[in-house]
Length: 193
Image (cartoon, rainbow, N blue to C red; front, top):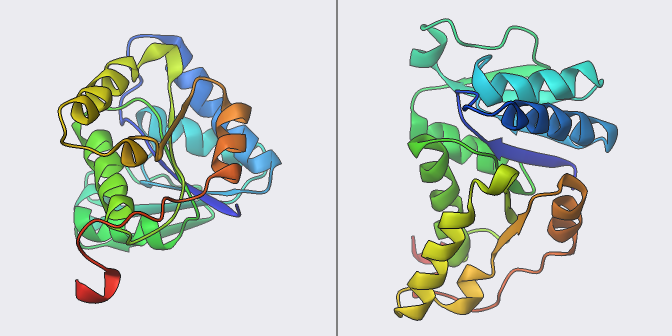
């Protein structure tokens, strides 16, 4: 993979491990010559991962809606900052620029971005690996929820298995490199949308 989009919180959370792992992920991507694509902000885990990559000599592309730039949260030292009109346009652009997706801890926005990428994959709109860096067990409850979705007949097992999970950065990147998208479609094709 030459580029990975990372979705994460605009806050640091209550435990220092979230920030330190975000910095480490940024550094790791830079050392592996993988371009970081992220939300373009200088706050919270978003700023931490960008700084980690930049300080390690990596390339970082931020994608930021113009209304957030006006709130003065745009990171000023990125390799590239792309301004877009809306949050939806931001996700489309981030998807276009990457070969895989990682979600770090975050709130509603992070989950919304993650689930849209998963939905697009489920519908066969892309075949990119989608992963959770499960720092400090943050996403344990989400894995319980996705299992419940399968158990109750609202999600196929093959679609639950699309979500790659690890608490170790190297292991997660290895899983992403080895990922093969399921061949099972879900009602629509890219041409029908």
